[in-house]
Image 1 (cartoon, rainbow, N blue to C red):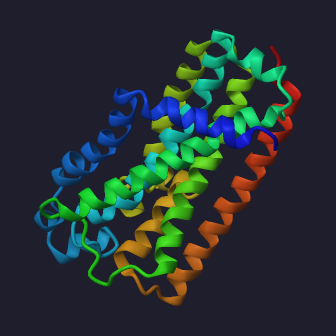
Image 2: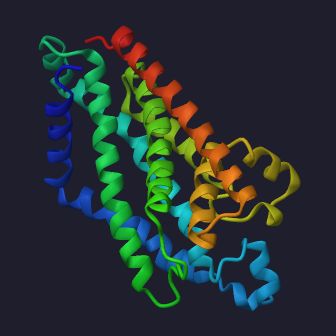
Amino acid sequence: MGGLIPLTVRDLKRWYRNPVSAVVGVIQPIFWIVLFGSAFDIAKFGGAASSAFFEGAPDYITYLMGGILTIIGLFTGMFSGVNIIWDRRLGILQRFLIAPINRASIVFSRILSSVVRIVIQIIILFAVALVIPDGLKIDHGLTAMDIIIIISAVLMISFIFSSLFSIIAVRTTKMESIFGIVNLINLPLMFASYAMFPPDLMANWLSNVAKYNPVSWSAQSIRLVLIHGNLSSGEAHTVLLYMLGLLALSIFMLIMTYVISNKEIRE
């Protein structure tokens, strides 16, 4: 798609040249890990017995890590559509439309730039989680396949929700509307999933809903890799199903984004 790389570079420059936006985007997930992750001590709930509820995680930060990484992908992807509306209001979108570029490149550049930002956040968050007291514990180490699963799960969540909200942004002219939709959807997606708490500690109806939430698929895939390392055949099968589900949904949403962007982007 013509113009994709230059537009992606432009969006990244706008991000890192705004120090407040860049710093907040990095610091916020660190607060989640340091404060929220340290607020719960699994050992105080019954030692090994309570640890079983958290799938054998040695501490809550290790359990929470999969959820936090997924939430980074979710939130960063959600706000990728905001810049489309902003460019429309500033008149920048009109200049793009008269240039010899594919209209879908305008949208996909936002998605691609959000992916780059997410990778940077993942690296920083991992470093912080490993060095804080009683932080992330990976006694078995990480293989190349483990790292691929972790990064792929987060990026696919980003693709899914950045595509969804880019589609909404393409058809929306008011900034207030997109923020309202984001605030309406993000918390239910986060709490109606396995990102923060194990299914055994959730209400039955909520646990059943969370089974079909892609946020759960990503969080559980990362969690199994971080906690267990060498997966059993059953665990490997579960991770494979989750990853295939995320891949199928990512491809579907990216195709929808391409079709709707070329059809609906107007001055």
